[in-house]
Image 1 (tube, helix red, strand yellow):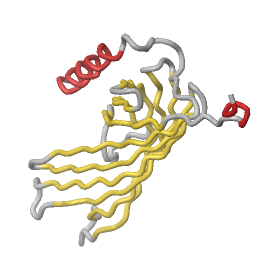
Image 2: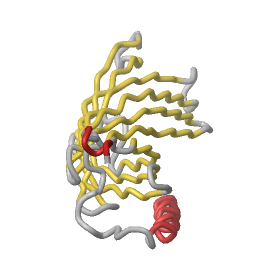
Image 3: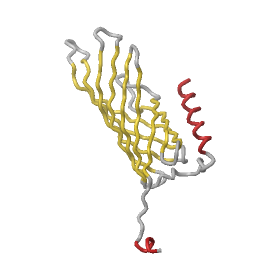
Image 4: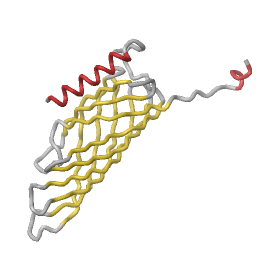
Length: 192
């Protein structure tokens, strides 16, 4: 809970610095017909080690709807057992963002994980597993500059069961670069 509080406070610090330039509570995202590229980096080191790297790309069709892909790699190692168990996971997320306000959106995603892990039966050979997750929740998008945003999402896994890799809520944070919209100019505009 303390981590969430600290992240929200940090996001609000950026909000107060940028709020004089634009109205953050107006409807829509002001990101119409733009391409976004960013990602996430997660790192936990200790008895359980977790390293996650993901790239995130999306396209805003209008001020309210964005569709995107998020391929990722996740390494987990647990030293609770002897010998230590490690898992390499790869996956893909397909997501849809519905912008409510400039800084608030609803994030819906389907995620599929593919990983090789020891079986639960003797002789404990490694076998391939897949895990499908449907996650939904609110997100906050905070401008850092005119084309650079930080985001924070709190998601709930609607397919959660006892074999799930992670449990709700799933908290993600990252950064996005918004490529500026290029305007097509008519020949008559250039002659003036």
